[in-house]
Image: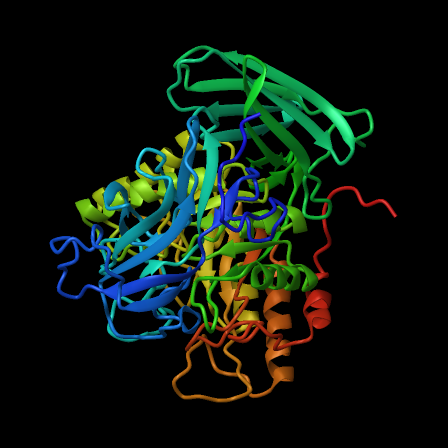
Length: 604
């Protein structure tokens, strides 16, 4: 077995809640979060002056992975600085045959990285993970990582809910610059698994595994062992020729102990299989990783959505993923607390809105039994540059989410943001369709919403946004399906459901944003929300119940997404406040939601 050479580093257990990639665990990793050197570069002179090659320290310190705009960063400045630099030292004992990978979970927006003054790579995109092989540039002993992040927060780059103006406004919030998700090192053999793609196939009760390797000169063997709890399910393996970089395995997932041949993943029973990978050369283990997967399917039949071939009514809540002291960055404990509350309130899923969560968040959804809509952060101007940025980062978003059974739907655009003229303009319609078909090609196993809320083009679901605060109006507007599907039913947006040249073709219908009841015990004229404000908790809860009843009793709806989980800065329409504490009794929320029962078999 290849032996780790990392030394004088705080190695952590792969069972640690801090492990950034829970679905592909290795033993030898090092957490680079914590104190880094930091500097502004407002004159954009750092590269010219050789900051990456200089032995001088940067003048400030920052707590990574928090953006400098957050309190938890230790800087807490709202001044605009488009270019920032980071430095961090680490010690490594170099050994032949071992590679060192430097991982960034997310850096906003354009990143350049040097190790020991040597450039190792760059990345554009503020929300998706990337990594560099740095074994060839590290030295035995002390090493230094230098990072330059450039973020103009421009409307042609995907920014989601970050305000591009000088101040926050409406539902756009404090911007995020630089490193905002974990940074870590991972030690592997020079021949290792770069990644695996796992696709459950319920029709044949098996799992397809596609593994990727770097170029290599050895004949190798990849094997996978599948377990459910303590039950061994099946093993499979394949020989890999020299310089063969892709390998494909089919693994049987059937068990006589399962109630229906396989252990299904559902929100009620989020059953997960364990899978262990080994890569060998001449019988010697070169690489090992442990993972998990869920056996589940998602599909459309007529106007219904089926989870594992059964009708599935979705009760989702919108999660913006913002925190009072840390903006878009959350600890494991914060993510776990939020999602546990979502489950306790009776929702069966989350729509992660306009930001891309950490992989630990998706793993929590997998484990707790919450379906998830993954959403690409929006651009706000249509151009060649913005189209290129969206296409690239959307591909990376899909790769990040692919193996997680909780993820059932991708939302690519929201409310025509960045394609404001889509109703009439064919080029903007074609762009949304290009994103839709690109994603379908990359991941044909999930459902896709092209432009959520209104003015749909290519889409698997008709999604509607309606923030009408009158439950009676909601019930009346959506009573007759034929009268609204090809019209503009929302009295708040007044937008057409479909763009010009498109029409309803029988898709399932989901009210994917509604509610948004603005309630805060502490009235503040600077806060924002939807509709007239209830004055008391009792009044707010009564309106919530009426709106929920109106939506859940609309026969043509196959589910909903309520706005929203938490207050965010100036926006006060959460069921939790900005500190993520309950505004209402969770049991009362659950009681209201329970009027729609879970579908499928229920055994007492």
